[in-house]
Length: 206
Image 1 (cartoon, rainbow, N blue to C red):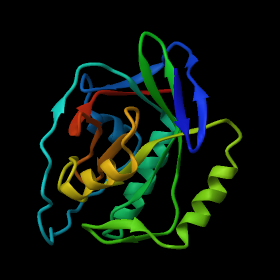
Image 2: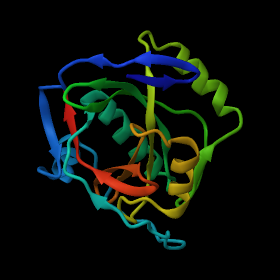
Image 3: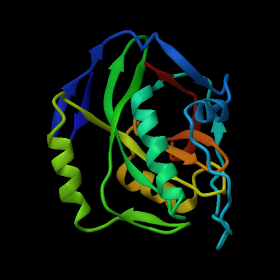
C-alpha cells in the first residue's frame, strides 16, 4: 500500500497504535481535559450570524490519534485567538500508519499569519512562505493529516464553507478536520466518507 505525500509515494509503516492513551472521545468529556489543561474563557461573543451546519454521524472505529503536546498547541492557539474575538486555523502534521487497518497520528501543527474575524478565517497571502519554512524545519518524513480551525460559541461542527475546504484540499481518506470551540470547550474531528461529512472518535496520547 502507498499514500501520497505531495508528489511522492510513501509506503505505510506497520506499527501498533499509540498505547499511552490519556483521553478518548466520545468515552470521556473533552471539556474536563481542556479545563485540566488550564484553558478558560469566561465570556461569550455575540454571534454576527449563525453558520449553516452540515449534518454528520459519529462512526465507531477509533483510527485518529493526537499527541498531547500537539493538542496543547491547538488549544493554546485557539484560546489566544478567541480572547481577541477571532477564529484560528492551522495544519495537522503527522503520519499515516497501518495495524489491522489504516490510522492517522498527529504529532504537531503548523500555522502562520491569518485574516480572521469571529466568524471567518483564512491564511494571509504571505503566510504560505511562513508555513513552508516551518514545514522545512520538520526533521521526520511527515504527512499533512488535515487542518484545524475554531468556532467561537457556535459549538464544534462542519459548516458548508468548511466542507467546501475539506472537499477541495483535504479529500484523501486519512484527511481530517479538527474543529474546536474554545468557549464551549468542545473538540470534534471530521472526515469525508463517500462525499459526506462523518464525525470520528479520537484519542489523545503521550
